[in-house]
Length: 443
Image (cartoon, rainbow, N blue to C red; front, side, top):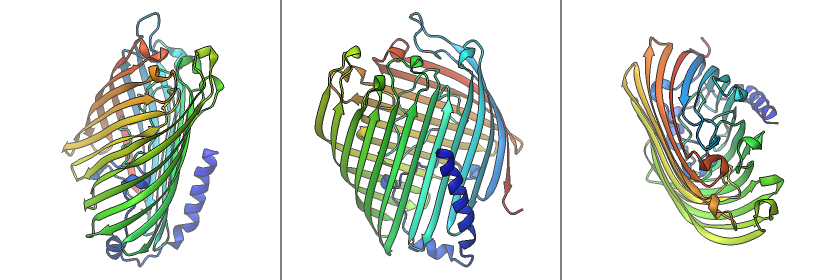
């Protein structure tokens, strides 16, 4: 189904490409057109430097990486298991835009091999598509989808995870050890600017997390979520936005084949300021109502449970992009999916990313995550816990097409989940060699 959606977006983009007017005035459009503020846009912040953006180009390459991890399987016979892995990633991407249309496609099939735990060797998949089209001068439709198939979250082409400006992103704070994993996150948004300084919009999102072999992740479960929202925003003083939004969520997890479900309704106010087109700061807050129903699982000693509660939903974020530095940070407190834990969670989540270019050939990147999951449910509180993680990498370009990157990742998880409790810490060092090439479209 997800591939049919991707193909459909390609067909749509091909049909509407020729409809973009060639005589549009970009300066006038930039002055009059409002932006969908980060708390309601559903889009992740960009953390790429100007030199790393591939506007109107076909880009492709090949990455080979190897890494050593001191904890790949969780606790086995009371101690952690270490291993070395090797990954190869062909990559291809296409970024194309006109005055009305922009779409961005990236695909990276990969292969990962483990030196000792060869039974977990994996054919990986990583695909993303972003699509934005101005249906009229005042109506804009956008959609994004991100799909990953992997045996580990560590062996992805990039260590920089997404930073969202609102509380609508997936809960990726629970990191399973070396285990088959499928995830898919998608959003759609439509906005209508009915006056020079007034806009309304609506959107939806979905997230699916699936472990094909649950024996590899004892204590975790598959999860899914769907959400819908609507908002109104007003712009004043050219760069200041205020507004109100309503959002609905349906959060599900499936331990032992059962259906644990939480529904939420929230109304929040938000404020966003754009000091420039490449800088934004946002704040949001309001009440959130949750309704939880959980059937009992006698074999796990979980009794049936139901609860209704009111909780605050608050958050803040900042995104700053310059030629040689780019950073994004966000914090949110809201009811969210458990990210693989049994049941939904009252989640405190802080994420951040930073990229610095010291010289034309030397770039550093930093990323970090803190999450506290307070699991909702009778007898499930013992599964609550927290996650800390941080990554640092240094990349050296050798000419225009070749790059060498070295990095380190530290992960600490404190959850009373069988597969995580015995070995809460993971340290990983890695090195990668990449070849990349970008060709402008139309040349």
